[in-house]
Length: 456
Ligand SMILES: Cc1cc2nc3c(=O)[nH]c(=O)nc-3n(C[C@H](O)[C@H](O)[C@H](O)COP(=O)(O)OP(=O)(O)OC[C@H]3O[C@@H](n4cnc5c(N)ncnc54)[C@H](O)[C@@H]3O)c2cc1C
Image (tube, rainbow, N blue to C red):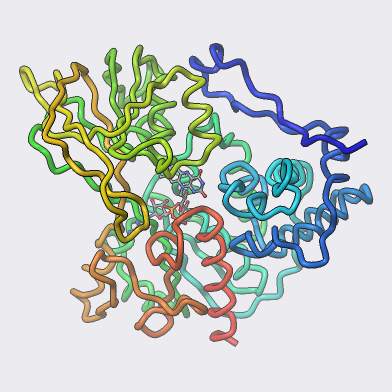
């Protein structure tokens, strides 16, 4: 009899509205064996092609079938340093699982859940490190930075990571909430890097506390810039400066990093009754689900297209709906109305879908109809761009880093080298393809390889 796809257990949808504990637990050992047995071990594995870094999926699943979990871990870690992270946050439905042949007529193999189980239940091997005498600076401690640091250290280079914030992990720490990515997962990976000898400096803003030129003068033979894209795009409508308007990044950082949801936090959050989140991606879902957990009574996601065009992961959308978040489609903000300096309402323009735009999605067009919605909090999740601090300071030192018109650093797609000697860039600050966790890790790997080749 055919084995059915195994599902992880999820926390009760009412209960989880008031806690930050992981929504999903892992598959059980029994379920992992059953799920692995569903893999057909295809000769031409489409799942591998669907994975942006081409993890050898059938091979790691085969190792699970053989009961060799450590080998499964080793196979995944050859390509992805953070299986516990990717197994939780990758949009598998569009990547590996979206390409699984079993999905054509039924349910694809739960590759993400298997990867997560392997990641959580195996340890990266501690490599033997032979000092190379070279030094590399990594700017930013997110997915790209951690991956590059790991690969560079394995090659024997001294690696120092400079991080602007007081905690390490980038978006995985300050953006993605712990109910999706438990912090223990991240802490374990960072501990591992420290054990390998990677040095971390927090509260150091490259471009302000120290410049690229100074890093070079300090003897760094190569620099990898992976400072992410943390600068929020705002709505550009009247009323955006009112109290009660947040960018999603600020809102999530306050809660995730500064623990603003807790009563004794030094940076408390004014929790109102009704919040609207503008946007339809993963960030919007995370902000909305976080708003529910910190105590907003009504939370809305307002999106200018329809549900079909929502860019967020399907699982996130389902979870958001289960947690009572209300979706309002085909509305765009026109004005935020205030009273005594605080948000009181938002005027929404009713939209309809027109012709497809350059992204291939049908463009929202204003109908001219306007509705008013009373609320006290507006959270803007319309995307982010790179912060120009590093480029500006480099420019003032006579180093002009070439960027595109939106400020993303221009790099060679294979090596991630910039136009400046020994300076590389990758991840969200220099995206090649979609900006997501696995692509940032892929960039970290490519840059580390190119730096290593160059240093040798
Ligand atoms: C809320 C949210 C949810 C997301 N959900 C998903 C998801 O479900 N799945 C998925 O695949 N992707 C998701 N993403 C995207 C994904 O997390 C990112 O694409 C990825 O983490 C980028 O990694 P990175 O290393 O390039 O940058 P980051 O993780 O942003 O790390 C960059 C680091 O550099 C530091 N930095 C910045 N400037 C400086 C400076 N001048 N000096 C020193 N340090 C500096 C920053 O503080 C930060 O720690 C999400 C993003 C957000 C914001």
